[in-house]
Length: 132
Image (spheres, rainbow, N blue to C red):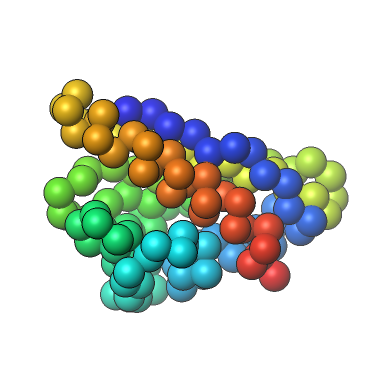
């Protein structure tokens, strides 16, 4: 399953956005309101749970190209990756889009497509509000 968030513009340079998103503790304020748990495991990994869904562990895997941050699930029931693609619009304006990739059977994909789409949309829309 491949899902994409809307593209959002941020009044910050690409480097500021990359620095913000590579620090996993900064994902806490990006989470939706229905987040029932958020816990830092280490400098590369965090655990979160949304109401009515199982706990998910995300681990920062790599900084690819110079402008792609790659996270993936670390164990658990859902195996997926989440990438943040950051592009320069101008010197002090960046564009961010989140991409979700997961390999699920058709029944699971049907059940989680809506909640996951909303989740990555919320993360993306919250980045401009919290990226300093």
